[in-house]
Image (cartoon, rainbow, N blue to C red; front, side):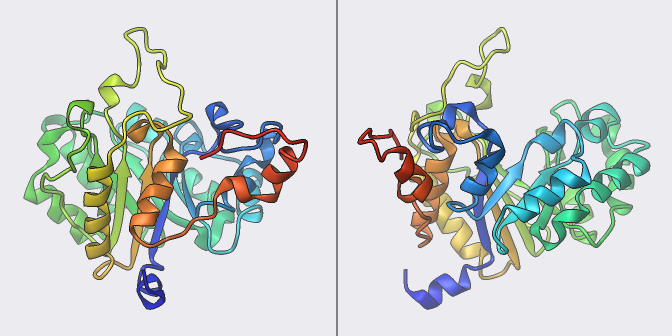
Length: 295
């Protein structure tokens, strides 16, 4: 891709869903890299990350400040809203917890690109639409929000209009099953604001065993989705002409190894993300002649 085209895509940020996976040790991170140094290493190779830990609880301001300090100036975060608000309170009576959550993220400053409101499948219009409307109407405008729906009944023009009216992004998610892994997500996805949030999640029904335990090790491509990635690259390229910002988060379960998937999508858009095997930390780790199994 030519340089001037790359400049047009400066508003696109691609990253993974979380960064702290033991499975990535010795295939993305150096074998003996301390866990506390993973974010800084990650940020040398990808320009964004979706923070999963905030779903389980807001970080302390000190932790958020550390995230900001160890990442480059142009690195950005999207933080998942806490499950206390989305899953336990179901967006009800949450003004206080929402304020506290956003306060905890203030040290990120302009690096906070978005807060993702991931709603559970049991959150449905029949009983929860009033709560959604009240929640959206009272969101602060100084922070960008995206809402991900996991129930099909939300796909209605009146809900898209609600989000559009309040400048909230309708998160586009790809939950295509493994039986159709080479197909893109072609269903209608509302475009509600000048900010686009894309989540490439994969087949969640095959993510866990019946016991609830994980059944895969995320260390390599397990389910390549070449055609789907090409389809998403086309959609993102087109959207880049009309959106101020685009954030793409890739899950491990989309293809089996999120860092590689992010690089594969980035390459289709003309981005040349630095390879982890070329990082000085990895070169030092292999200076004794051993080869690491990297991307």
